[in-house]
Image 1 (tube, rainbow, N blue to C red):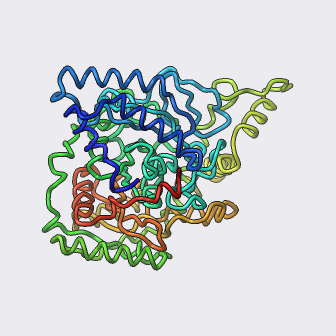
Image 2 (image 1 turned 45 degrees about the vertical axis):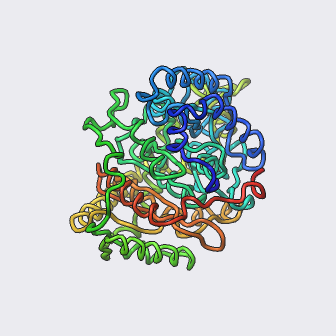
Length: 491
């Protein structure tokens, strides 16, 4: 990404003005993917024929009534490989789903396509979204566009790298414990996790159903808000979908932050932050103060328990959700097996990677009759305490700000042998998922030449406020317009 590359909002304006066609943008994006993605490895597969058909339909729509065309009509995008798309192979980054072609499209993807956005293909991710570096994909390892020897974050690493690498202006990812916001921070893009239930999970290959949420990664907060506006809203196909109308985030996006009270969580800053990350956050706080916001210290006292609770609850739900991957309903099966038990064992051992097997075993153990109360029930109690911490904090402040990640992007392979070090990457993001509140990461500077993210959290349902604070900070800085040297790093 570079300052010269237009945002999705700018592309939409050019399309409606007739300065460029959707087919031209689609062909150009496919050409960029062909030229750059050999080294980034953000895409698992593209669907050019499907994309060009959609582009021609968008052009007809724009010709007939450009004023009525939605803001994203004709704009290229791509989606994480955990979101089903009818007729396009969808594998969740796993060998066990290799060759699976869904007969339907996820609601979030369908709504973006109904708004005229052009889906170019599927983006790499950690297998079943389990990971913080996109090194757990069964197919390839995605590189960070800022440094090809470093991780892009995860599990939506392909989604973040595709935006940062200038391949597409907007993507969809999923966030279970930070999997949109953390890679957005590490790649220098915007990443927004809406309130749980605001965006339908229908058609999402589930990791942890009470935590998963679909959201956009983009070049600007405006782009993220437009994508969110397109996909949010009640869906009767998702039992967890909130029935309340969704306030339009665009109407308040340019509102000021003057007079807002922003909480700075003591416990987050007490974590092991890299000095450069802390320095960038302190500088961001100065910007917010200059904009008229009041920064006050708040306490989230159960933060230190959140990581442990998450890594009981999420694996427990994964154990249940992935039980269907048995070689009969899903998966390639195990020809030649003599018993049903042997078929199950071979299918799941050969089909799942090490991290997925680890989490399934942890989750199965936590749910077993002898340990349910000691682990799963207690973790649910901690989750309640974490959510209560946020409720009490938001009684005194309008939003909370913090670093998104305690570190910048780390070298490929640096944490693959140390699961606990990898899990610690999410210490500042996963409490948001336990509480079901909205969160966004916006570019906030650099440390050692690598991006740092500012995280903004807001009360449940206040997605527009979350976006407004981020947009105000973005407008007062130039970080979002700064991108990696693509000619050197990605071409």
